[in-house]
Length: 175
Image 1 (tube, rainbow, N blue to C red):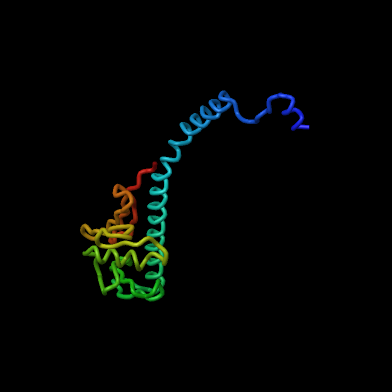
Image 2 (cartoon, rainbow, N blue to C red):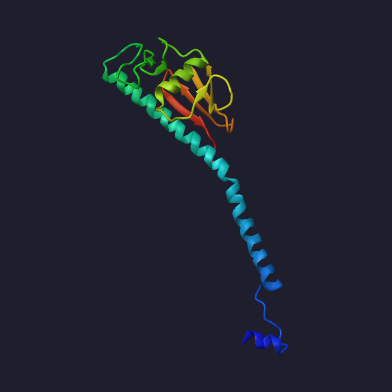
């Protein structure tokens, strides 16, 4: 039947969108992208905030568990290799807080801060090093007996660990 209609000289009807329909769709996509794009841009800041907050919580919990182990073992002074915590190589100061793994009694170098990080955090945690480099998540530094871990994806975000008191805090502005 279609062949007969075409043979009679009637035009064939084609399907498709009109120019008005296409313009309406383009305008709607533009409005949606104007509303949604700012939210997608802030996802990076949200991710950095969440990453630092999570590590701060993990480090704080690890320090508290270390101190609880030190207390449960009956220690009252600085202790090398607190057995029963992690791999048993983390050392404590006289207050029962971690200070490294090499027989330390006080935090005095960035290397001690890295030892604390590695000894207190569980496997799978982001890594820390005394210097920035490829694959380094946090760079450790020390001032007095306080370790500072600088997040390398956004260096305005820091985690500090005061070995004298066991306090773990962060400079981590919410997005």
